[in-house]
Length: 117
Ligand code: AMP
Image (cartoon, rainbow, N blue to C red; front, side):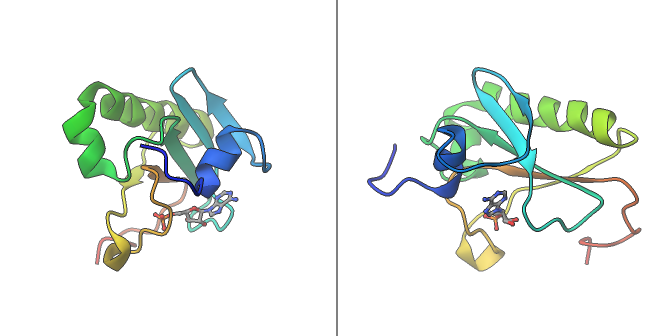
């Protein structure tokens, strides 16, 4: 559920702070990561703030998780060659900094093996 302190992604969804939005539906928003780690680095974010991470989303709304994956595929096709790497940092010790579930979509000239080690 929503906490008292909205995350940065809730503020982007509410248009309180700007983002380079590339895709939006009733349930999902996608925008460019402010600190890109690949030629194409997008964040696919369910609009609901009910789920902190992908494990909660998978347990609570698998259809919405499938929508996140389908959106990643669509955006990788629109912005690159259709090939993509999908990353869900899950937990602070794994590098998660925003506790509103989101997928990183990396695409376009990925170096073989980068992020795989
Ligand atoms: P994570 O570390 O997996 O929680 O990912 C959070 C991501 O959000 C990081 O890659 C940040 O660069 C990105 N980020 C933080 N603030 C913004 C913002 N205002 N607009 C776009 N991306 C952001």
